[in-house]
Image (cartoon, rainbow, N blue to C red; front, side, top):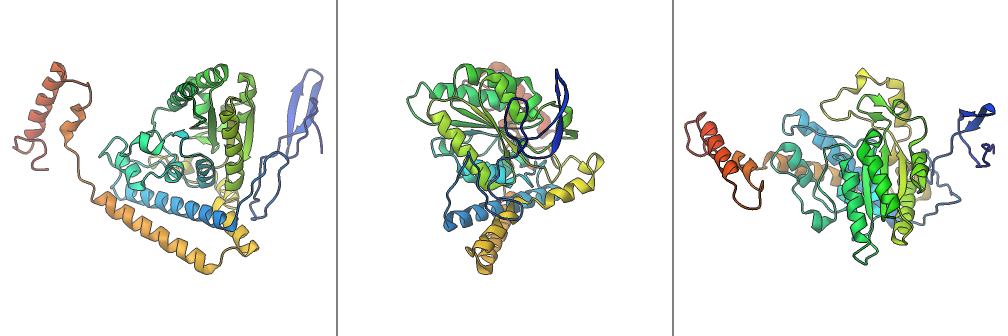
Length: 387
């Protein structure tokens, strides 16, 4: 196995490394992987994981249900039932693996794409869709699920997560925090500031970067000269790159990072190397900036198919099990479809509520003006009438 000039052992594809002595050929470090794309179980010298057949069947069920729900949400948006949707297609393993690694007391701070993590934290999919339909601002109680509301502002949730983790150190518990963000967000100042504070204050936070290789239409190589996980070294904490399509590897590495945090060893950066199989959101057209061959290559690394192949190879699941999971996924899709279409429209004037804890003269004046303006379109005196 070749080694870099500093003695670290690497395997993988060749890459050019610049040094003061000239140009040398080294190799990119291998992803942490426990389950190959062909569904073969492999071992890793640093990260191990023991799972039972029952646990693996449960993981497979989560992956399938999350993908089916996500696909139904995309269809609902195309039908005009949702204003927007950010699909997680291709990233199910990263989210389910990291989500299942968390304990009930751990907090997750998501972006707007962590539908699989929400599923693992017990958030009803319908509550996610309410925000994208425009009938609520989130729909779930963050303190009930230990799952913060979705964050649209790119990268800001990493600061929120770090601050919360710093607070945990004063509570006397061994809970920890996971902050989710994408490769595009890693270029934001907020993320780098969160790294600084987390390192200096030794906060119990795991930074989980889903590198799906496209920040909307910009590839990762236009945002960084080094692999993203290596950035952690500059802030004084470890970074690990994991196969983001391997649910077992994501589970094992996230669990390890959370245990580090609980033990007072500070933050960790996990780069889940995966691929966004669909559009950035339903307002995006990836065919304008990606080649079809790239998509076909990643289809062979599908996170669900590799778990299915493993279950079949080991004799831990039969066709009856897979059919039952598919049937359950269709039931979920039907419930989501009917639930979205039956969501009541909110009172438009509700936008003025919860602006201030107590009454405010200017807000009251603005509400009255808006109510009068809206009523002028249908002749009703109340905004909620005649809609």
